[in-house]
Image 1 (cartoon, rainbow, N blue to C red):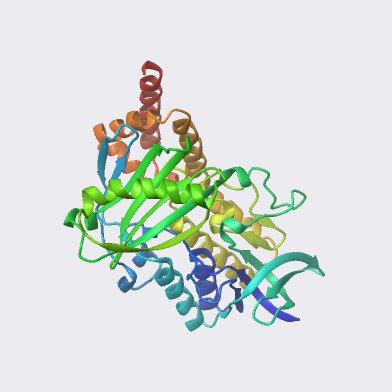
Image 2 (spheres, helix red, strand yellow):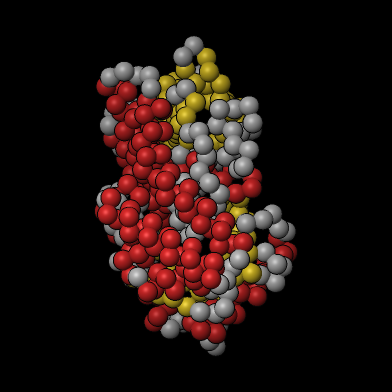
Length: 398
């Protein structure tokens, strides 16, 4: 049985960042990645926050476009635009692959085609069992610490400390086209991230997006229900022409289809079990209103690496609990509020108009909602609650 100090499961932004920063700190690190190529099967609009590359020491070469604006479209056809500084778009192949390459350069070992199965405790260590899908064999690794970054596929028995009965209810079925144009779309296309909130032909609430990339446009939909592939394709085929008419009318194109499950529910209540830590989408670290989760995932990886590095230098026990406290303090307030807000809006989709109109009227309000809650001063909290009260009054009047 192989022994390591840190075992990371999953090599997305959370797992890759954890591996890179832990290895850099001198922690012996092994990563298990289920796919043959890191990032190759990730379906994601892949929008990055301003300053993401600088914050995580990544090359600007992975950035495709730098849109300074986000446009929100509502059920009534209204469009609201807001500045976002300088956002970025990339692809998950480039983002995840680049982080993985840096992790390897720091000394982390990455084993692909390794499908996580389970973990158990034995003599103060965690034993992880996985399937080596290349050889068809079951293998085991003994680790001092484990960081699970399994994405939306993270499911645990209800008896597990990491179990969450509401997990399945938060899953979003997604379908995306990569649209490769024969010639460029109108210039505005590459300056704007688009999110659309509406009720689809099937009667389901739909979140749709258009994110510009270097050589294609990512155009997709997410439905917070379990729906068939046929229904998803029909919904996306109905949405695509609305974007085509505005941004690339008369331009020929080919498409590449992608589909998977994402998560849009509340964060998972428990993130640690002994020396096991849970991070990224597997922890539910996704903004339910926008689907953003890459920043949160990478920060989870950083905090996990820091916790393990501190444990290596001092008291080995308690690292996972310290990680959980830090992560919840950083993100949980905002993400829980966003989940409640999205649930409230989806009950009556006309409420999206009211919220976006208020954001357009009060630019400070819109700017503050783009930040993490731990950045707010007392005065800013007071301002936010005042805006929340105003929104509640407008909803009642409508």
